[in-house]
Picture 1 (cartoon, rainbow, N blue to C red):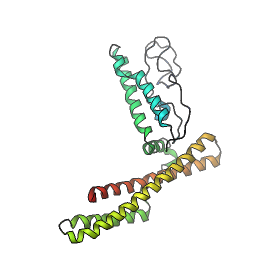
Picture 2: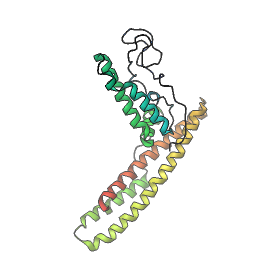
Picture 3: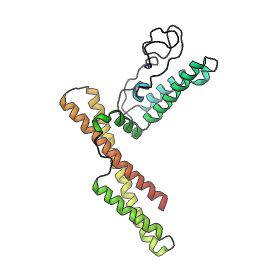
Picture 4: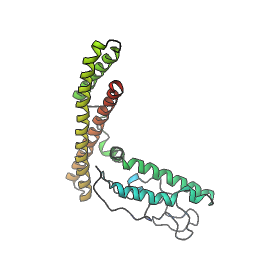
Length: 238
């Protein structure tokens, strides 16, 4: 899901929490070291993780660029370099490192990245259901009944064998469904990125934007239900 490449911000373009240096009160312009006193500056807690790592809000990210940007910033903020600095600088370096680590862990995984972007765009998709569609819900309930029956037949091998075969078949079907959902998500990610790249502010663009976000959330929600039942199957029948 991560082959689309975007240019990233340079190593000194990370936005700060304030427009003035906390130490000498001189103006800082998006740099993480003050030009005047060379003190490290705090990363803004208001930044989203995409901006924090210098990426636009896209759902396909070049993993090598993401990793390179993360390690570049990590070296700049690593607490080991601040052991002989003031308590304020040590606190800032720890805070910056913690935020960068969280941002990197979130954005490097395509599913977590999509879920995070949906949180950022919550105003557009807050009314979307978080429960599976009726047909999937009924299917999961039926499968749960079969799982319970299989567990109850633990001391009756003659009953266990056909139940196990049925559960294995259901597992294969669900795993294929999960792969299909991930293929659909990849297609939606590409659609979202293309829409963002166009940067249109028309009513039609907003309608398309909301449609894509809703489909992403629905697919993520359904994928979660399927993934959970597959995990239950794996732990039960191996």
